[in-house]
Image 1: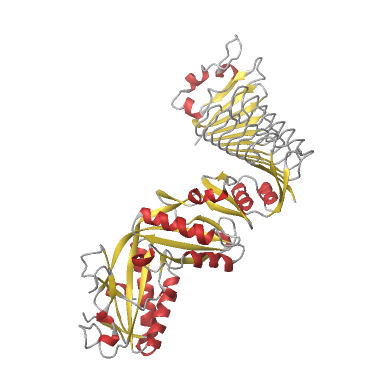
Image 2: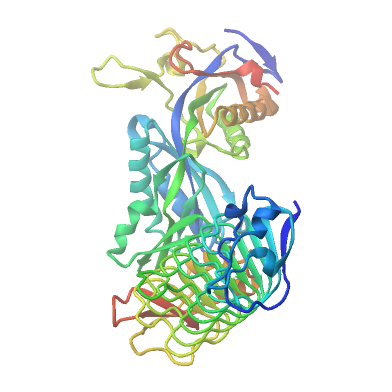
Amino acid sequence: MRGLTANGVRVDDTFAEAFPMRATALVITAESAQWARQAAVTMTGFATSIIGCGCEAGIDRELDPKETPDRRPGVRVLLFAVSTGELQKQLQGRVGQCVLTSPGSACYAGLEGAEPLKLGDALRYFGDGWQISKRFGGKHYWRIPVIDGEFLCEATTGLTEQAVGGGNLLIMGRNARTTLAAAEAAVKAIARVPDVITPFPGGIARAGSKIGSKYKGLRASTNDAYCPTLTGAVKSALEPDVACVLEIVIDGLAADAVAAAMRAGLGAIVKLGAKRGAVRVGAGNYGGKLGPHHFHLKELLP
Amino acid sequence: MKPLVLTLRQTPEQRLDMSPLVPHRLAGKTAAEIAEIELQTTRVRVTVGDIFRLRMGEPRQIRIENACERLDWIGQDMMDGEILVEGNVGIQAGRTMRGGRLTIAGDAGPWAASAMIGGTLEITGNAGDRLGGPLAGEMTGMRGGIVIVRGHAGERAGDRLRRGTILVEGGAGRYAGCRMVAGTLVARRKVGPLPGYLMRRGTIVLGEGSAALSPTFVDSGSHDLVALRIMASFFETYSPRLASVIRQPRRRFAGDMAVTGKGEIFTPA
């Protein structure tokens, strides 16, 4: 699947295959940007892949005090899961354990959706009868007394069924240092795109997986075709000049947001060039039969 | 859109029931039909045409000019549209209104916004006693919507308030927010004695405190609550003056402990 070359970077004539997901968004605020970020980082921890974490979550962007409902610094968090039930379960568990507990935090809906997901409506019982319901301007809030004062939480948040998970880029380089540089540049560019997250550590996955395994009961295993140490031993997808591969996985609230993120990431990799960054960019798919969304790299080139 | 304008010819000899003159009840009616609507509260029959000079327009927007205290039940059961009253009005303006916007450029009599359900009621002057309150025998007062009083409110403002918001830019009389079930009542200036008397739940915010607080309210300390900031940004569109009052830290009193004690009164810290 040889494609184009841009700034010395070979771009495969392939596509990323992505899947429909359910998603929601939250706005978390606190007295300082640092504590808003802390609550968001804690609640989106261990949320890299639905395979083992139940959901994929991350920070969409930081919000200026002018943009948040209570005019304090905030962070917008996105949460993705395969079903509404699982999304509700993850939302409740994560907000309850990580945001409710974070000093000075408050939590609001980050998405208008046709269908509501319970937020404060699920957490209010923590107030043990002392919780206070307030309705203003068509919005419903719960005030839950906690030991630093009050936890303010909107009753519900919105759900979207238009979300897309599994947009991706495979970044291949001559060594670990340059490949990581290219991947970091791509993550940085994607972070500026609204409505998307890159759920893996720092946005980058080094353990790309394929479906299935030789072992019974293991749903995913290492993507041997892209393992540089297995070239020669397996049917490899790599050329001799590739010694390291990193993957960026992208989830977005809509297909066009994922496309915009892949375009931004690809642009950053190409801009860095083959000398300092990656020599080749590809994307993961399953032959196009499993996922309805196909993002072709050549269409996303700048 | 040209509004329907009703100008009072002179002070009527009896109190009038203005409740038929709301947008949804006038929709599709001709000027002649509107002029025939009866407004009397005694045995003497009077019609709109007898009392008002009528300038026909789109009845989604009604303007009542030269109003006086004998006009009762203005905007009762109003569903939508807009009514603007220039002058004072009688009792129960906006009673059980459900939607739309009622503006009274003057003073309102007792029971304004009585048992209101939704919509916006603004009184640029003063409001009489029992603002938003229930009539005798009714279990709840105001159940939704927002009331803004630019002047003062009388006694028992927000009696049995259940949901919705009452904003008073001036002060209020005795027993403000008495028997509140929930909802929010804000007064920028000082209120009379015993605010929140027998309140069960709900929030009262007093910009300048009260003449006397019931001993059945207990001090819960000074706090700068996020919930008050959210309220402030909601109030901003209705009354920037009230919003700035709420942005400051407040002392919280919980009560009324004579009943459930889950209500609260915020006073200056």
